[in-house]
Amino acid sequence: MAVIIDGKAISEQIRGELAAGVAAMKQNGTTPGLAVVLVGEDPASQVYVRNKIRACEQLGIHSEDHRLPADTTEGELLALVRELNRREDIHGILVQLPLPRQIRERAVIEAIAPEKDVDAFHAQNVGQIVQGQYDFLPCTPAGVLELIRRSGIPVEGKDCVVVGRSNIVGKPMAMLMLHENATVTICHSRTRDLSAVTRRADILIVAIGRAKFITADMVKEGAVVIDVGMDRDENGKLCGDVDFAAVEPKAGYITPVPGGVGPMTITMLMKNTVTAARLAGGRR
Image (cartoon, rainbow, N blue to C red; front, side, top):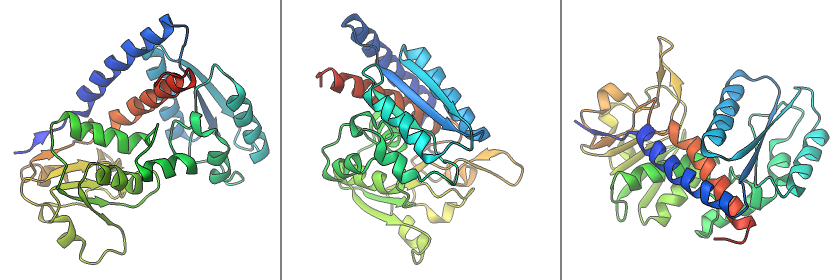
């Protein structure tokens, strides 16, 4: 039976460390500040924004919630971003995706000052991640890396397979594992004989958005299985990209859904915000 990686417990541990860091920063006259911008009424996005604001409150981070109507123009959103870029009390800016059709996501991402880009989506930050000289990491891949590290799982020299090549998870995740000296393979919808590739993995990281796609016959005995997926099964129940019930007896370590990678994402956003505030104050 696999060791269950408890993302909730690890997330709480990190938040405790962050809260202590925020308290120390406040004593020195700096309060980290995060501005979250939501355009439109997408229900899932509203939940995410509420959770981010709540996390800020728990850690003592100043937060602002900017709600804009669904018919907001690209120019209006860019004007708000420019205003937030100028403000010294705001250290992190997060524009909740997806955006309405009339607004180009890339234009908005590139308008955020790189030093305030706590999602680490700006081209400058992406380039620094590739070079291994970064200040921020995308929140979900950073959370996965913390789960692996804090579970005491060795990475160096291991075969790591990442299923999914998105700019948000798959590509940066592969870069981070490369920096940890793993041998990395990225799989996607055009990969031939996917099962043969995933069965080689000592560490299998799955982020494709297809419920229970990874089955037991696709997993090596004793492998570390990290499930980034957040899906609904045939009964409408929350599940991941990995068939947990089938894979768990075969894996060495595995993350559950919910309670695995999910809790780590917002925690890493908080960490990036605190880092941005430290950098703004000249303290590395």
